[in-house]
Length: 253
Image (tube, rainbow, N blue to C red):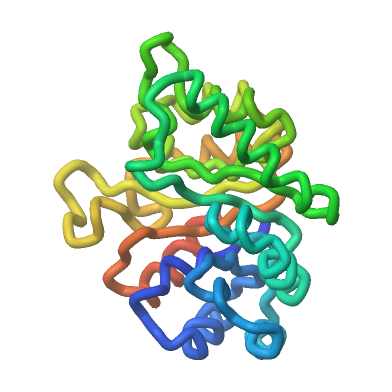
């Protein structure tokens, strides 16, 4: 059976982490996904403490988000984090608005930049790739999208597909899954509330309680190279509700 992981960014407003990990374990989660706010500046001893906390709760961290600055400017720190925590796949998660290219050529060059940044991590045995938001699906002047250009510029990049952000970018997730299934190595599993609802949660919903066709999507994704499925909610107002309801929905697909 496919395992559902949990992106720890979803719990950033519900500290401490020492309470979050037992909650996840109690509800049947076996994996978590890390992000820079959890481990970005930790020394080796602190990273080992975090690994021990994961072990104590029967959790692994097979995937992690790493900021572009860390990946490019502090590769030894990034590799230390990945090695110590047992991470297998490294994903760059975001590009700030003021850093985003404006045309196809610029996005292709960004794909090449990611390709180059990822070389040292691929050489060390890690999967390396990009995690999308919605801006990658906005049409450029030549009719292509940033996401196409990124993947073309970085032919060895894996894709962690955030399906709900893809939908918010007005793109058809099924078409993208069919086209790039061999590049999709991980999936962010999240849901979108009906229009006008859950405004205090930025319009997101617990998995299975929104509008995304997850049962059908899981069928499509099962034909791809995806190895990791990671629950995310960008701004939940009730962590325990999110954790319990979402894994129940996932296990029914």
